[in-house]
Length: 207
Image 1 (cartoon, one colour):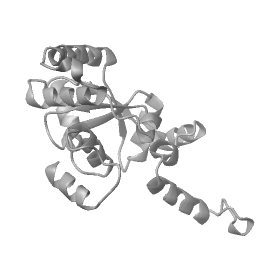
Image 2 (cartoon, rainbow, N blue to C red; image 1 turned 60 degrees about the vertical axis):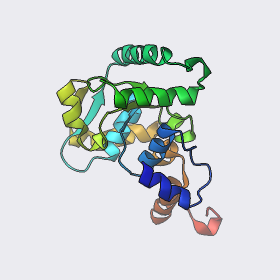
Image 3 (cartoon, rainbow, N blue to C red; image 1 turned 30 degrees about the vertical axis):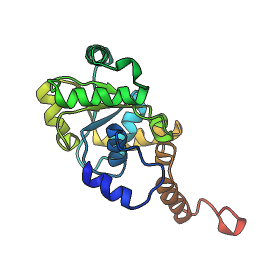
């Protein structure tokens, strides 16, 4: 994180998280492809299916599901520990989330998933996002092994042949890269693809 943060600050980019907001920096890193300890989940099975199909390359797909009841119990246990710390009553919500992160990565929480509330920026809201924190950096690269080993979630196999139907259903619900990511990096390629497909006519002023 230190290397990413130092170089990002040198770019003079506006609205970066404050130095103390470890979770905020991890969110920025995750969004831009750097390894973090975060796993990104959604409360919507339809959005989960969209991501399974969008990131599908070959072979069957998978949808991972973990128990929200179990996660709530984990969160309650973590919150009890945070409440016992000095100065808890002075923490705002973002500081509280960072305290939870610190607890997970320094304590004995390797066999549980503790949900962390992301900042409520457009992408997180659109994706109905929930974060969990792992003690290990880069866990998303081998999440299959880690979750299977700890028996933290259930893997649902989705046949590759279902991909076109899944994508069509998601599109009918308005689930696209533009609506889920809500940034210019998604909008630009989408407009480009529309242009290539001749769905718009520049001579009529669509562009």
